[in-house]
Image (cartoon, rainbow, N blue to C red; front, side, top):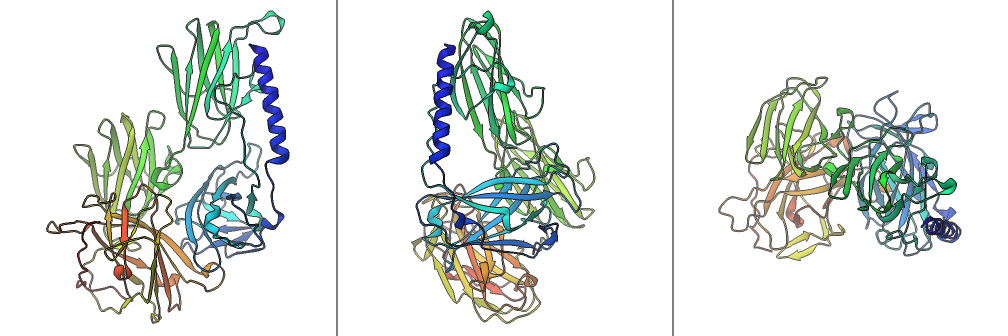
Length: 588
């Protein structure tokens, strides 16, 4: 049996050698041709750290080879929590990419783990990869990339010209068939065999060199911080084996395995990126075992990561509706939000039917809760008036059960997102000069509902007089949960705004996530109408007279949304309470 294991290892190493010679090729033309940043230059790195989120870094890649394979962006970034800050923090930022002509304009959030070694004196280094589908390039050989911070509460991040390299695969990646294969014999941590998620067979108790019995096997696996690893060990009826998990560079084990019948299960959330170790020890008996490995990625609040177990790892939120996930290996999620003294925050937590989760709010610099939580059925609510300005924290804890929760955050008087429609004052009103959408046209509305998230709607407003007052967008949308879906659902989407075609990447643009409440009256037979106001700071667009707006869905799990040319009305000052009523739509 051990001979079979060694033979498998030799075959595997041979395949890897062949792959390393023939599977990948990187084009030198995919190095950065142009780079620009307005960040603070410190020792060759441009730091994006201003509170107004105006700092950026942007790259131009030219002469990208044509082909069908996707592009992989290889990132190296620096990150810390503040000026002259601490080590070990991840890099969270917004990545925007565009090709010439303005037909492609896509944004996504990126989270790069901190990969600094223990002997790194600074500990700021983060790295990782992002895939850009080849179809997004639409045949273009030039690609513009831009990085911005997501909010003033996310970590400071730094880039330079060499922070991004494009890796272009010219052959398919063919991995050896792991599932069902007999694993090689590994008797200590130094011999740990690197494996991927899958199902494997091994054995313990047989004789090895020196007449000794094989009493332990070691394997290793690459985990990213925040990933959930699920291990399941099925032991033979003639043996009793134990399952352990060990983090990188440590000698102690983590997690606790549970047992049912002849199967042991261990679930754990990785708190550090690197090579983790799986150890199987024979206590008695002998025979073959089966090891199952499953890895899940977390995506709390659409962040592509876990919300974190401490306030320092909190995800920054804005008013809106967010989803998260808690389970036995992940008992706590932390979020943060910026409140001004006198603002009222309203929180609503909807939890799974078979789970019990807790909700709390803490003041800046405090660990004690603020406000009183009310519970009705499986919904918890908390309302509180902020008595101090600063970063407040929202904590969600698991008491029992597991599953996905929904967190609704609303702030009265929130001035950089949605505002109440009962405004007063004089206004200059503008409608869009140009409109385009590739959505599904149904009775005058373009529905964005594809699972690939390629559908969008775009508006251009021209000849808007310059001024110092902020711009207000009155947005009307339709929303439902599926084709021919139900009533009463909100419209959640990504709004991108800026200047089309005025220099590299449009020169100035920004992105925000928006959630419009459903405002359909009970008498509305369909109930799809959503409406709200969005504030666009004029300081972000000084002297501009042309404005470009684009809307995309954020996730394929979000509600279907629909727009038309009249969906956005632009006001140069706060509008009065009198709004024009749009024609009520018929059902999809």
